[in-house]
Length: 358
Picture 1 (tube, one colour):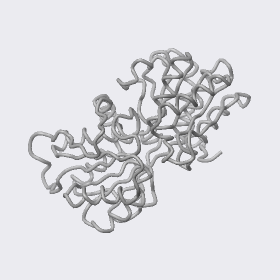
Picture 2 (cartoon, one colour; picture 1 turned 45 degrees about the vertical axis):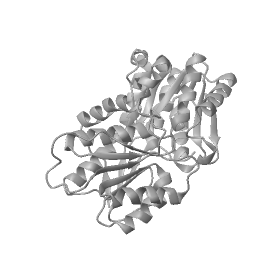
Picture 3 (tube, helix red, strand yellow; picture 1 turned 30 degrees about the vertical axis):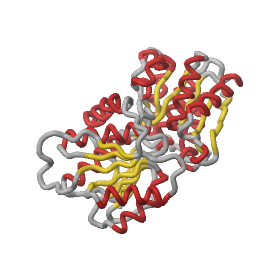
Picture 4 (cartoon, one colour; picture 1 turned 60 degrees about the vertical axis):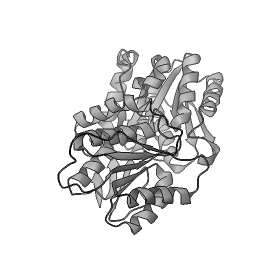
């Protein structure tokens, strides 16, 4: 079964607003309990609440994990149900992930959501043992089962818009892409970005780099690696850098700000993240994906007694992905805004098909 993410702009805006609170909530412990919502829980809902297990980098990454947390918090408030969020551990195994999800399911949490493709095998294994619990997996569609919702996105579409913005904003005709880890998921970000840049000007030089070959090497959770990568690309001549690197993206953005070039954020609207406020004037925009909205929609479906299952894919056409425009400097660049808006329209209308590989 396939579904599209469907939500109003009010839900997306509310989730984005909640992301402000998430940025200050980094935890060093492996298990934390969120504040329980007040009042009685939703009528007909019999679960203990929402169970959320974070990806590498954990809560406080100002990006992917915080977006999921914001969706969870909004759902807790709207549906008056509690929740529990659990942090990953450094160097953990797949068995650790299985144990984490099993504990949440055994405790009665429903849905149980793994944030990140690394939870794919664990979700598939644990979901088979708890057929009456709904599971969600963000950024993976291999754990398909009747009680699993695979929450995935057309990342290449938002990245295409980032490429168009970069190509229109560069003054040196030289831009860069930095991926956290050299994996197929991040290849989609690169492919969309490169195609977007080349749609504007095929002569623009594009630097590309992956910080590590495997997640265990820290490509998604090492701001110092992001900083070093950005420094190298800036030294090579790039004046706009797009990073798809999770927590490592903080280093990319801070280095771009220090060297007075543009950075393009990812997943969340990073211009609006309080923890990145010192660098926000250098954040041209962000290629967003509505992870928070996907988490919220899954919880709502369970509370309503009609749990989602199968592939649930976010795209430009359903506001599952996009390009943020909150920086006033970006809004003042009329030619950049017009180009990005036209590119978005062309993709939605089917005039442009964005590749997922170069």
